[in-house]
Length: 503
Image (tube, rainbow, N blue to C red; front, top):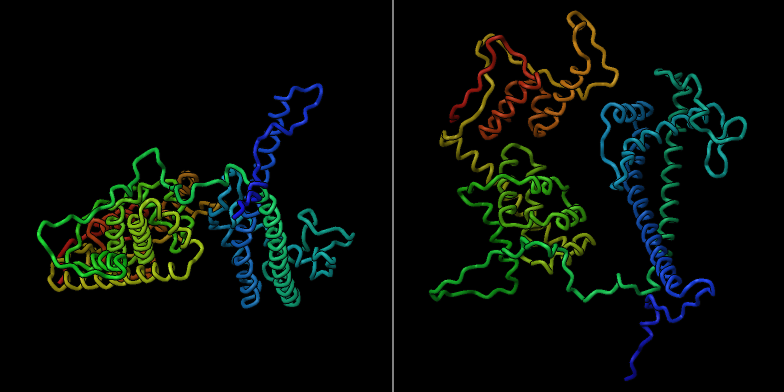
């Protein structure tokens, strides 16, 4: 059979045999310039592809947020639009695209600017402004409406005339819908550009595209891999009868899940800072988990796996089901990576990121089974402890039975234009007050969701129920933080933390 050499036609090499040098330039310099030009064009194409893909990712985040605001305006009117603007202004999120730029605006900043522009344009539409064929709102001179155009005086009022408000709500919904359609159009253009650039990129075979099959590993070779300490089942000297199964991995997973249901939960070490960060990755965010492991493979240890499961028990006990589920999810990822070994980690995440149906179904089945067992076992353990009268609790009890304990909760972070009024505020430092209020808000936000919900009821019984489910040390720390943040109001003799067995 004749050999096919055509696949090497696209190989891009730095060959100097076909370079025609200028009479006044030596051949070595021409070769270097040719090589540099080749590499610069290649890098520019890679940067362009990365930029276009990041634009698609940004649009995928902004689009559902705009659609949600549009739906809210359709259902609740102008009040919803203003509430979103107020929320972004008072409690903005620091979430932003991962571009690495120090001046990268957050998603909330982008949405805030869009809402301002849409409100201005909609107000002028109510005043009779025209919209050109490209969808831009025009002023009386035919130019596009911009920030310098200002907005009608009536649109700045809180209580708008009924006729104006109705027209404004319709215009807001239409302009938001236009922006969503523009994002969709832009996505089509960007995807076409990416396809075009990748097609040009794939025309030439470069050294970057040459790999030796599956010999590459995502684990750093400069230091020992945590996967190298994968525990091996010790061999017993005595002869034992074994049953051969078709899927030994499934049996191992069952054994791992069943270990979470043991009668006595072993004490494991606390989560390391890396493990804590790993546990905060959202459920199903396999891309982020893979990127984290590539940067820090120290989480792929048996100790991390065990500590994540132990933290899942503690979180479930505190009522923080979100953290419990994340710990279970990430512990399973660690377990899978350790079972598959270094050469299988990349392939495993490739299937999970691409949402391979069978792989995803198997993983989610393991996740649901493990979390369900932890949740059920936690309930059983609490019931057993309470029945035996061995469980200690922290409860808030006033020294004086006639004194009622109250709660002074923060509404949010301190406003930028904070003002101090009333007697005794003359000598207070406003910056110190802001720092205290911010610290108080940060403490409250760091509490588990179940505790925050109980505090919001401002009922002592509800708060004590949550504290009673916590470990004594955790509950004591919570009470200290509540006092530090000034969230408790009580008599001069104070509040006593009663550690007692509850039957």
